[in-house]
Every structure is written in structure tokens, then in C-alpha cells.
Length: 585
Image (cartoon, rainbow, N blue to C red; front, side):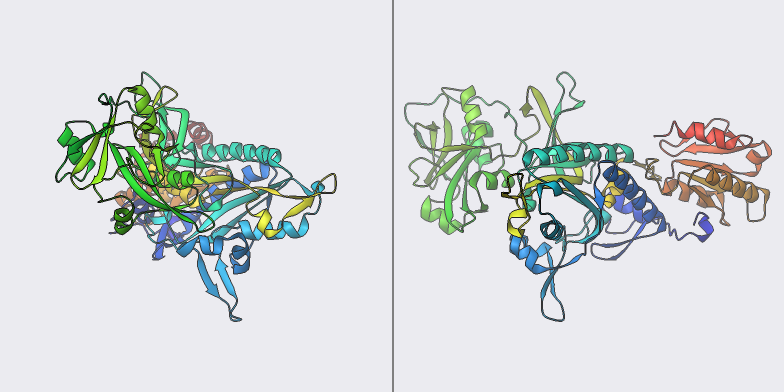
């Protein structure tokens, strides 16, 4: 439907009361989406056009690299998920149910189990590989806190792709093809984006990258390098999710250490901030203790004391990787039993494993004669002049979160929020082993299939575009994913010359290959132009009595609200629109 009088486009003057993200506000106000329940959204016709234009771009790039499209069910037997261990590992986000025969089922949040099940049945020989498959399918995820409109929902459409190879070299080749394809998708969609190193998370495997669109509503933090000499220019030399990022810490000078640790009375001092004030010393010259309990895959638990600079924070993902399992903060009774009173914990004399963050070691290397102040495991007492290695044994691991101002390869890093718009994983044999996906090699030996997984969320691309490209009047879509290329606004009432001319312009542009929306409603110019700015089609043509009498139409490029001086001539309008279109981002 290309006439606004017949299009379901319920625009709103005010945003929803619970809307925080700009994309949530504007997509509702522009009549693109409506909520059914918490985390459940309906795409209305104009919004679905945006979604499907993104789908078309993704499909073209998947087909371009030789991936084959299929469709797998959302409803799946729980047994497949039990065989991979994810049925219990994922927790509450996985929808679980039983059918009428009392069989356990799940609503899939991703399709590794299903696709591997099929490949295990049909692939027999090395001659059947490599293989690349993809789909666009609904995913179900029981989000504990659905928010931000279509950014964090319980049901969404995802493009998920899977590759199957004979060995890791084959996986690497496929992985690089997908990296290139994803770059083309995001470039074609008109987004600003970064590819960043990331954690494999619940997917498992060897290596992963995320694709991030920087914007204020982003729930992820991205660490980015800045070129020397230009603190405002974000470089592409380094980019990583803060969960896995590593960097050189900002330097801190340590006071010279005595021959042995010195007891310091610190009555009532129980925080790093209070200790720094008490000693008149920067927080980075103090060590804070983080007692945790780590549980490995076999269920064995161990108490560990983690030490890091007082100005740094533990990264949960990095700590779990370093300790090789699930990690929780130790309970107070465990701390008192193994160490002493919380608020004055330290490693000296402690009979527990100690892990020191790598930034502590790097800081000490910058102050080779320096010592640290740590807790003495006594109420109101600290030890000053402590030297790791001399005064206590330890292991080193990178467990802290990078902070703005740290350095990577000589470049300072900044941290900015971003929306995750895609991810890719080198799964290796994480799913093929438990699900029996194997093949016979050239020598007749059975080998596990090596896998990759690749996801993109069209809804997240749409929301990211709104977050990045909007102003105080509405959305300013990139032209590749806009609901319509051109909106033609007829200012006169039905039956007037303006309406008739606008209809002719609509038909001419449509026949020339543009997608065109005609605002043929009865209503004032203010209402029509306000709705046009809110919807945000890249180009607006306005047909009024005066401009029509002068043989032209008014034209405005939505991005930046750039009026075309003198408008566009009615004679040769299609050619003029084509020329202008090439200059629109």
C-alpha cells in the first residue's frame, strides 16, 4: 500500500511513558511498531518494510558467499539441548514446555542443536564438506528485563547461519568470508559500526567477534583506540568488548618499599576510598582484595583471593575465563573462616590461592622499588610496603576491566556504549561432538565436523539506525533501509489540482523504480509535514498550489532537513530525482 489514506500508520504526538531509548520512542511515534506485552512487539506495515529491506540486504550477502537458505522449527525436542548441555546451562532464558504426550520441548533461542542434528544425518564423507546454511527464523528468549522497544525483546527474527568444515583451516576460510559479508551488510545498511573481539559466552567454541553500532542506548561498552595527537579521532587499530578487552594500565607511582611490610593502624577504614584518603595516596597505589569461589566443570569448588589495583574493577567474564569455571563472590562466613574480617583483607600469610591482576604487575614494573598497601586480615589494620613475590606467592591473570585512558600499542583508548547488531563464533566441535556430526576423511578415518555460527538481528539494525540518525523532529533513515524512498505530500484537498499532480508524480517515480508513499489524506499542511518528518523517508516532495503554478515541486532531503533551493522541475522530474538521490546518504 503506497497511499497514506489506506496505510496503517498510527503516528503519535507523544512517546510511550516507559520509553527511554530514542529508537523506542520514535518507532512507536512513527507508527512502525506496537507492543502486545512485555518484550513482545508487532511490526506494523511501514516498520515491516524497514525490517524486510534489511532482510533483503542480508539475504543477498549470504547468497553471494554461497550459503544456502533453509528453515528450521522454533519448537524443538529438549533432548537435543540436553545432549549439548545447554538445556540446564542456559537457565531461565530458555523457554521450556511439555507437549500433550508429556515430552519435554523448548522454544529455540538459537539453532545450533537443530542444524547439527540434520547435518549429522546427511553428511558422511569429506566430499560432503564444506557446507554453509542459513535461515531467517523467529527466536524466543525469556528476557528477565525486556526494554528499549525492539532492542531487547522476548521474540525476534534472526538470521542465523552455520558452517561445517573438515578442519580448522576450512573454518577459518569460511569465518573470513562471513566477516567480509557482515561488513558489506552494515555498510549497505548505512550504519556506523565496529567489529570487536568478544567472549564466546553460552555458545562456546574458540573465538568470537561482535558487531557493534555506537549509540547512547547501547547496553554494551566498546573499548576503542584513539590515534595519538588527536584525542577526538577514534581509530580502528583496536576494538573489543569491554568484557574481553586488554590494555596497558595508566601509570601510578608506588612509594618505596621497606625491607618488610609495616603494620598501619587504620581504625574504621573499610573501603579503598577511605584508605586512600587516610594514607594520602592514589587509589591506584593500593591493592584491593576480591575473595571468590570458582567452580569448575566437574563441580569442584575452590576459594581464591583476587588482587587488583584500587582504581580498577574485576571483569566477570575475564575472571571466569582465568579461573576456568563459574565464579561467585565469597559469602561473608566463608571470608571470615578463610581470611579474616571483610574490609581489611590481604594476601600476606593467607593460606589460599592468590591471583594478581596483570595490571598490578605492570604497575610494579614501572616502580621496581615500590610497595603496596593491603589489608592485614585484622580489623582496623593494614600492611604497607608489601611486595608481591617477596611477601606472598601468586599467579598472574588479566582479570580487570579496561578503563578510558589506558593504552593499546601506544594509543589511548576510549569507551563508548554500543548496540550489538551481530556476532560470529568459531564453534569448533562444541556441537558436532555431542550430537555425532562426523565424517570419513580421505583415509577412511572418522573425524568430527568443525563448525561456525553467525547471527544478525534485522530489528537491531533498524533500531540502531534510528538511534544514530534522528533529530528533534523524527527519524532520518539511511536510504537503503527506509520504509519508502520518497514521500510525496499533496497539500490540497482531494479533487484539487495539487492532489492530481501528486498522484501523477507518485506513479512516475514508482514506475521509475522508486518506492513511493503518497500522502493523499485530507488534512492541513502542518499535520502532513509533521508526519513526514517523523517517518523520515530520505526525500520528501511537496506539491502545493504555488509551486505547481510555477511548474515545480518543493524538495527536502530528510537528513539535516536540507531544502533544495528552487525545488525540482516538474518537466524531467524523474531525472532530477535520480540525480538528487545519488547525493543522499
